[in-house]
Every structure is written in C-alpha cells, then in structure tokens.
Image (cartoon, rainbow, N blue to C red; front, side):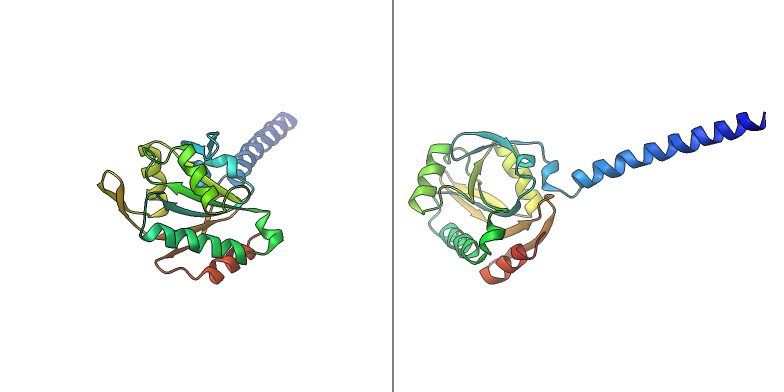
Length: 191
C-alpha cells in the first residue's frame, strides 16, 4: 500500500511538472506583448501576402505613412533613411525597416513599389506594407498612432517611429522630431 501511495504521488508530481513547462516554452516563442500576436494579413510592395509573425527573427523599425502625403511623411521617410544609414552593417542584416500605409485604398502594391524605387528604398532592408482598414487601425492602435482621413487623399496623423526586437516586443518609440542617431543606437544594441 505504501508503494502504491508513493507511486501515485510520483505520477502526480511528474504530471504537474510537465504541464507547467509547456506554457513557459510557448510564452518564450511569442509573448503577449508581441506585435506578432496580431493575426492580420498584409501585402508587401511586391503583392506578396504575409503576416507580421513572418517578420519574427528580425528587429523592426516601423513607421506609418501614406504615399500621397506631401507634408510629414516625406520627413518620416527621410528619418527612416537616416536611421538605416546609421545602423551597423552587421546589425542591419538582422533588421527590417517597415513602412505601413494608412491609406490602403490608394497605396496598392504597385504604388508602394513605385514609391520605394523612387526613393531608392527597394530591396533589403525595406518593406512596405498595406492591409484592410481594420488591420491598419488595429496596428495603429498598438503603435499609438492616431490618424484621421480629412479628404479623399489626405490624412492627419501622428509622427511616430517604433523599434521592436526580434520577438516583436516594443523597445523604443519616438514621436515628433526624430533623432536618428538615438534610434540607430537602440537597434545596434538589440540582440
């Protein structure tokens, strides 16, 4: 009887230990605070469909723009280019510079591709994304970017650049005038 009780407690102990390890492993893969938890579908400038979790394993520098913008967006794009130029070349191989359109109706993959080529931002590490209005709004909320359509081709929007580590966790966010050196240093310091 004593051996049966010891065996029963041993089985319960082993069973309870194995259950606790499984959620910890899953948590390490993608934390609840990860941008990769969003399950929305996106299109890149080549028309290829992807999800944000497909970017896992790369550090991300993210900004929201629209291509017909003639005021703040050109400044944000120039800031992204300055940041890219100041990231260590080895770290840049581990980084994706992501520009997300807040105007998916007009910013088709073809428009995004032409915009990227015009600004010498085609190819690695540049990625332009568009999605449906709901997915764009969801991502904007995660990034704390506020935007409002004020005419068929003009939006009022926040000027925010966000940095995410390889697990999709936000590590830095800068609003307004961007100090590209500081953001590049943040990216250079990521694992």
